[in-house]
Image (tube, rainbow, N blue to C red; front, side):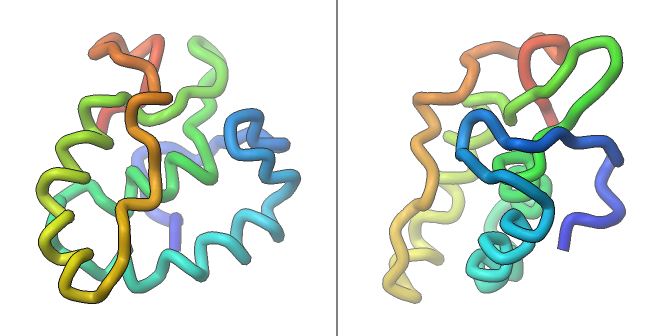
Length: 107
């Protein structure tokens, strides 16, 4: 589900969501498959993958998605989620509130 993104390095354990390894991340991501198919936000797949398989770079370390990306996705997808009786699965306010690519991951 997360192949072909603009990054190919991640780190385990996921220190934010206590995901211990790639097998556990794949199991959790499978539950998000329906959400990944929503066309409500252009970078939705990247956001979901970034939550469970965060971007890791030699310069910046492990980066969570930026709060602004999560909040925008939440606003744009809330109506579609309501139609399938799902709530927004992430607390965007816990993510870094920055536009600096050294602090968080932008699409």
